Amino acid sequence: MSEIIIDAKNIVKTYVMGETKLNALDDVSFELKKQEFVAIMGPSGSGKTTLLDVLSVLLRPTSGEVFINKKPISKMNDNELALIRGRTIGFVFQTFNLINRLTAKENVMMPLWFQGIPKNKREKISEEILTDVGLADRMHHRPTELSGGQRQRVAIARALAVNPDIIVADEPTGNLDSVSGKQIMELINELHDKKGKTILMVTHEREIADHAERIIHLKDGKIIHNETLKKKKITEKSVK
Amino acid sequence: MDLELFSRATENLKRQKFRSLLTLLGIIIGIGSVVALISIGDGFNKSVEKEFEKMGSNTLIILPGSSFMSSVFAKLEKKDVDRIEAIKGVESATPLFLASQTVGFKEEKKSALLVGIDTKKQDLLEDIGLLSIGEGRNLTSSDSFSVLIGKRFSEEKFDSEIELKQKLVLDGSYLRVVGITKSAGQSFGAAFDSAIVINYKTLEEITGEELTPFRIFAKAVNKKEVSEVKERIKKELKKAHGKEDFQIMTASQIQESALSILGLIQMVLVFIAGISLVVGGIGIMNTMLMAVMERTREIGIMKAVGATNTIILSLFLVESGVIGLIGGFIGYVIGFSIALIGGMIASSSGINLIIEFNPLLLFGSLAFAFLIGMISGFIPARRASLMEPVEALREE
Ligand SMILES: Nc1ncnc2c1ncn2[C@@H]1O[C@H](COP(=O)(O)OP(=O)(O)O)[C@@H](O)[C@H]1O
Ligand SMILES: [Mg+2]
Image (cartoon, rainbow over all chains, first blue to last red; front, side):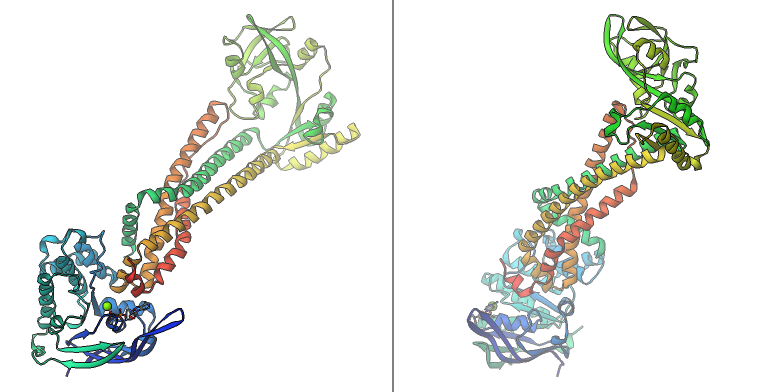
């Protein structure tokens, strides 16, 4: 089988609020293989976002260890984690998290800037990707001038800009109507099937989760079920 | 990145024009006053230097009184001039006398300053740059009721301009104007510029008073010997007067003290400018703290998509540096304009102030302002760089 790209061992994330302590994640272990498509499901407050943030090295766990390509993140400083995120992980959020004063193209160019890629190259890459996601005619629009579905496309384009191995999406359709939600899911499927991206997606909708190959069920910070869906095959042949 | 950091920073600044402008005020005032001060101070320095260059570094000035305070009571004697001239190393010495009298010209009568000189010694006065003739001729030893007048005196004293060969009336005697001195823009010739220069013997005759020198100018034979000559004069006059009721200054000494007073004034003003820079710095810090707060979510996004703490830090540092830089530039332009205007006003009132563009001052103040901006922005920038991405993203 494919190699393990993210390996989380005995993750605990504790939030302390005054007197009370809350284990948002309570001894979670999880492996994500290259080119897998995994969905994380569970009721609201079950720790889905927290788990996704820890797995995508956006958040350090209270205890436990996360290995990215076999390297433990506890040994890395914040700058190194930022570099890992910048190179290997693309983020898609429920609320899009685009920068409103920048145009679509500029939003997509930003992660490339952090990678030190020269401006003309950044522009070229951004234009190509925005065209790929169907926004060729919206490049110079600001997020506020775009529909929800279009904004999420911009966000996906931004996630793809640095050509990362992993796409991490937290309820990517949560703020969208069903039609655009469907289109976004088609796009994400395509990233997995055609581009060979590893996908890690949080959702609380079964219908959305069904696009994945595997579903992790979370409840009260624990994995209660690891469900493998048979309907899809990993299409390793289509990888670049 | 490097240069792009600048364009990002200016982009961000453009969005908050008004607040940035307010923030700039402290820096503008601070840098502006520093630039104005330094420019004017330099101009003054140059003028003083020029003045003394002309005067020559082998000039000594003897004035009555052991300090400026007691000069009212102490008096120099005419004989002192001979005493000084007799001293080894002194080439020549000459006294100046001062009197104020009512002088008439045509229908008008006005109180005027009269400077009595020894007409055998104008060459010394010319030599040390105190007196130079613009029109007409200098006085000769045979002149008694012939006088020189200052350029300024000729133009401004009376309603109509006084011309060569015209006559002034002093206590019933006629004074014939035989020469007009060159306009002396500088401080030392200024007394001549707005006065009547007359043979001191005539002055004594007219006033009926025995005058005592209010200054004696002496010239040392050798520049290198000035301080020895000074000591000798001091010893000699002390012996003659029985006490040290006089002061001897050398040109370089006067220059030094003039410059040190100027330096002191400058220091005080620079201190004030410093305070406004500190205030400006605090303003920048405040603006940047607000900017960081407002852009918390943006910082979170940038971090999520791969911005390191270092990048965030430099982004905000450059932004605050650019605020400082803009303030510094505006401040420089205003400060230098003030200096230029000051120079023009000074020149029109007879003080020669040479205001020159100094590239070092421009770059120095820009660099300084940028640095102040960066220093002020450090705490906010650091706060931004240390933000937890997840928490920053949660911010609305
Ligand atoms: N920064 C935080 N401080 C305190 N509690 C938090 C914080 N983030 C999340 N939580 C809590 O942790 C639990 C899991 O949150 P989250 O991972 O966002 O759940 P989900 O995404 O499944 O809705 C929730 O009870 C939430 O209130
Ligand atoms: Mg969530």
